[in-house]
Amino acid sequence: MVENAIRPITLGRRNWLFTGSERAGRRAAAIQSLLATAKLNGLEPYAWLKDTLEKLPTWPYRQIDELLPLRPITTT
Image (cartoon, rainbow, N blue to C red; front, side, top):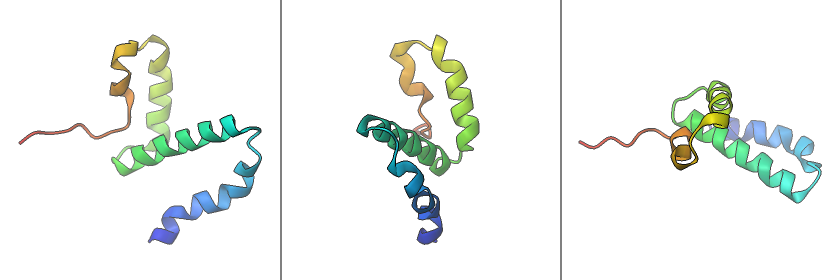
């Protein structure tokens, strides 16, 4: 199970080895982290990313946290 979870990262390692710069590598890691978080929260990662990128240009900066792929916290 764990092996299957890390397989995409392992297979892509060579592709990401030459990202161009350390900064680009950090960006790639941040995007991968967001996509993994979306998946863990029951969202389809690429649909979430597309929706977020479409909303981002007009989204109020103060509400940027609302775009994160996190499950809403429910209080009982």
